[in-house]
Length: 327
Image (tube, rainbow, N blue to C red; front, side):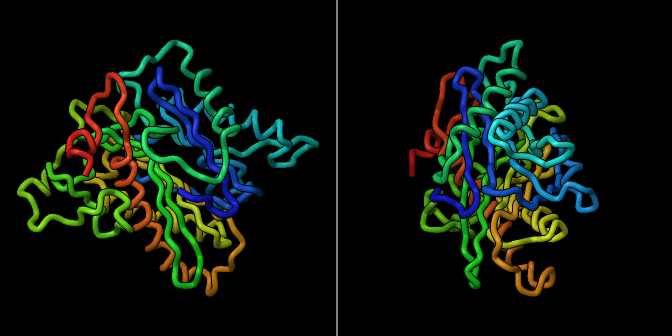
């Protein structure tokens, strides 16, 4: 995906671990918020993003694989931020604020050595070093080793422009307990929101398959063994309360693209990031177009993550292209 104004994004992937990290670096400290709708999240610094708390802006958002081990990626990001003089000024020091969320990909066929936390710290710093404008999608970064109920997952991105010229983009690592297609067909649940054939252009099937509403999940599954994690960014200047509402409504995109979503076995988490200075005319009452666009854009990004996944050795599930012939 092309650059998003005011935001640099970097991936670091480890093919041996079959895991990775994605870091989001705003050009300047940015307003952010978080909403967790899944029952088994793994996160760090999430309380700092509550609107009632003191630290108003963040220096980075970190998404990683590795479950709780992966949260160490935020240490690597903090190392990089500190070395570049970034962080919250206090007592003559600068303390980087880098909230993080991780997903569970420990059983995906990759090697998981005893020094996992230190591996993710290194990946966190490497992702910062790699940050730039263009954003790769597919089996990269935090989406390197992800899975859904019956297909390989991945990292996806999508962007939309609203009628007033404001922009919203969604970035997501898809590791859902549910599935993203309508039954066993190649048609994505997010098909009504697709732009320009970005995930195959198949649209909806002529008739819904009989298993479209079937509950199909990864089995066996345990709490904490899944999770879809996302960042929704806008170039609008939001308050923390407005960013919180954007994060909440963006979760609708997961429900539009994944079934089931937000289960006790997922840690579904969305960060909202205000990466620009475009005024939001009318404040909270006029936030709804941005909220609607965020949900639709996240649904698109989820489908694109699965569509763009590429195979690797010892994968647990096929990619969408392997199963459906690369349509």
